[in-house]
Structure formats: C-alpha cells, structure tokens
Length: 423
Ligand SMILES: Cc1cc2nc3c(=O)[nH]c(=O)nc-3n(C[C@H](O)[C@H](O)[C@H](O)COP(=O)(O)OP(=O)(O)OC[C@H]3O[C@@H](n4cnc5c(N)ncnc54)[C@H](O)[C@@H]3O)c2cc1C
Image (tube, rainbow, N blue to C red; front, side):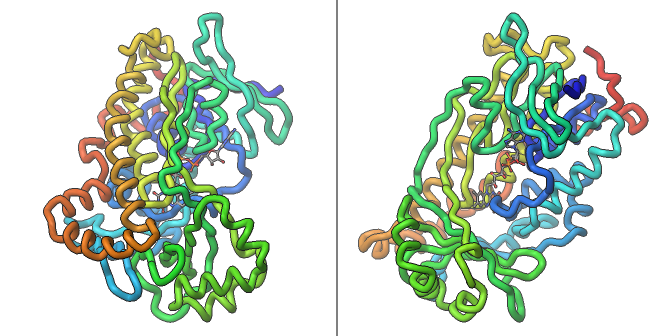
C-alpha cells in the first residue's frame, strides 16, 4: 500500500478541486489530489465559462495560460425560435475586461491549474486513482481516504478531506450525506460535435425550430458542440427506430446544420446520451470533511453556471479550510460554529438563488406544448425589456460578486505549498 501524509486531501481533479488545491498550496498547505481519470479530457462536461469565473482565474494568475492553450470568445447568449431572436443576452454590454462567454475545453483549464499546482513541493497528484473509502477516527472525524491507483492500494492521511468529485460523488455517499436529486427539466441531452465551417458563430444559442430544443456553440478548435434535449427515457425508443430516424429529427430541430448532420454523424458512436439533473446535498460538511462544486450542488448545462460556481466555491472555501487547519483539529465539533459549516451556510444561499434562476431559464427555454409556445415570445419580450432582466444577466454572469481571491493569505513563493503550515 502507498501511503501519503498531507494537510488536505482533495478527491476529484475537476475545476473545483484543482482551483482549491492551488489556493491552498499558495497559502502554505500541503495538498494531495486524488483523481480517478488518467487524462484531462472531460468531453462530457461543460466548457462555457462566465465572466465571474474568468475574473477569479485572472486573479489567481491562471486565465492567460489557460486561454493561450486555445479557447473561443462568445459575444451573446441567444434564445432563437424559428429564426426569431426571443432573448438576446448581450455580454459585450457588460463592463470589460471579462465581457464575453468563454468556451474553453476543460482540459485547457485543468492543465494550466495542474501545471501551477505542480510547481509547489507540497503538491501530490494521484492520477488514475479512485477514492473508495474514508478513514475516520474514533470520534468519527474524517482523517483521510483509501483508494486504488496504478500501483495498487493507496492511503492518504490528511487533516481535512474535500469531496470535489462531481455529481455522482463517492465521497458524499461514503460520508452518508443525503442528496436530493431534482429532475427540474426532466431532460436527457444527446451530446455531439460537428465539424465547423467558414466563419464560426460567436453566440451560444438555444434553437427552437421544431421538435426538442437544441443548445449550440462553437467549441475550440473549430467544431460546433450541440446538445439536443429530449424528455427523460425517450432516447431508447428513438434509437430503436435507427440512426437515420434520429438524424432526420436532428435536421428538423436545427435546419441550419442539416448538411453537417448528414456528413458528421456516421454512427451511434458519434452521439452520447447524458443524464442531466440538478440536486443538492442536504449537508456539505462533517468534522474533517467538506463537499464543494457539483458534489455539494449539481448543475446541468442550462445557463452555464456549474464551472463558475465550482470555482467560486473553491475561492470561498479557501479561507475556511485554512481556519479549519489552524484549529489543529480539522474543524469544530459539528455544532454549526466551525469555519467549514459557516462557509457552507453562506454559500448555500448563493447556490439556491442560482438554482432558482436556472429552473426559470429551463422552463422558459425548454418547455414544449402549445401553451408554452404561444406564451414564450410575449413573455420573452416583456422580460427582456425590464431592469430585472439586466439584474438577472449580471447574476448569471458574475454570481456572488463579493467572493474574491484572498491573496492576503498567500505565502511568499519560497514557503508556499512546502508543508510548513501552522496547526
Ligand atoms: C452536458 C453538460 C454540459 C454542461 N455545460 C456547462 C457549461 O457550459 N458551463 C458550465 O459552467 N457548466 C456546465 N455544466 C456543469 C459543469 O460541467 C459542472 O457543474 C462542473 O464541471 C462541476 O465541476 P466540479 O469540479 O465540481 O466537478 P467535475 O467537473 O465533475 O469534476 C469531478 C472530478 O472528480 C473525479 N472523480 C469522480 N469520482 C471520483 C473518485 N471516486 N475518486 C477520484 N476522483 C473522482 C472525476 O473524474 C472528475 O475529474 C454542464 C454539465 C453537463 C452535464
């Protein structure tokens, strides 16, 4: 068995986990990240990053390097019905410099974060390693994890464990933290890419042409990412009718891509069905343990909020984790007064607001049926003209603006991440 001793063990090397790891390393903590995948490819997750997340990554010194690996800027978010624009979320009207939606492959963001983490001597990255159990002490405080990696069994002993392992979080289950799944949209998404052609559009669009709505945006380095929304569990019936049937439904749903659908989808292997849901864990902490990102609160693609929230979680949890480590005992006794519990209480309010907005957006954009179709254009016209709409756009773009990187907690480079943290 390989054994690692560290201050914080982060399970999951996604946007939440790696952002948190970098913040803690810069503050002098030792961090081990346990990530089950071998590569940084995350094809089935989102890649649209809102201005708020861009600003935080800039403050961390990560944005430029991630962008330099390749990305695509989008000016607007559009809801389009049969060629008519019902909602125009114009990001260029927001104050610069982060006045765009950035489509950036997750591997570019993760590679930059990982490179910067690796510059710290106190960092251990355990790739191809899966967490399978929690280590608890006699008072049921979490003290590390057990897992399995390329060299067999592994143990990471830590003063705090962070579950950043996404929507199907193993850490959440192992910690027996209950989770409420919300099938608010009752949708699955058929996720696929088509080759780009000519001038690539700089808009993220939801098309409503006929049949189910489709999300489309240009994805670096020049393809179009599409997500065809379907009622839950309908895909099996559609697939039984053959690939040509699915392609004809797709052509009807996005006529402007009809030719590329014919040329670009050759087999069922070009299509991936994703189960899209949202949800929240009822509790995000236990003594010695914190959940962040999708493991605490799960988000689908609507409104492109999940990565923003994951990065903001990391930034907001950073001082709380340092306080918990400084206590010397991981956290207080689970009586609601510990730094991790206070973080969770405050952050839950932000997340609840965003989830409500996503639910409204989902209803407005994805609902089908005669009544919805009749009401949508008028509702969209009214909503787009009100100041409330600008406030909503601001909230979706930035999230909670008071969350800022605590650079005052960073150590000089010589001691950062070297494992000399007090506590
Ligand atoms: C189809 C789709 C499209 C989306 N589009 C967008 C979008 O455009 N913009 C947006 O902001 N959000 C989008 N989202 C949501 C977004 O992808 C997530 O909210 C975001 O990735 C959450 O980040 P995270 O770091 O919390 O979790 P994740 O990105 O899920 O990362 C979790 C990590 O944990 C690892 N892991 C899991 N289990 C274990 C284990 N047992 N041991 C070790 N490692 C483990 C995983 O391999 C993964 O690397 C989309 C979601 C879906 C489903």
